[in-house]
Length: 136
Image: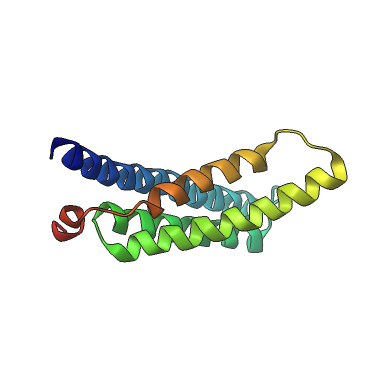
C-alpha cells in the first residue's frame, strides 16, 4: 500500500514539474518576443522580425496558459502542454535531422530545445492520479 501511494505522489509531482517547465518556457517566449518588438520599434536591426516575434510570443502564451492550467490541476492545461510540446518536438526533430544530414551532426541550440520539449512532453504525458484530478 505504501508503494502505491508513493508512486501516485511521484506522478503528481512529475506533472507539476512539467507545469513549472512550461511556465519557464512560456515566460521566456514572451520576454524574447517583447524584447524583439521593443528593439524593432527602436530601429535596431535584428534577425527576428515582427512575424517571428509574434510566433515566439504566441507559442510562449500557449506554453504559459497550458502550464498555469496544469498547475491549477486542470486537464485542459495538460492537454495543451502535450499538444504544444509534442508539435514543437516533432518540428524540432525534423529540423535537427535535416540539418544533421546536410551539415554534420553536432550539438546545438535546437538539440537543447528538442530535449526541453521532450522532457515537458513526457512529464505532461504521465497519467495524473485520481486524487490529483479530484482535488482541483
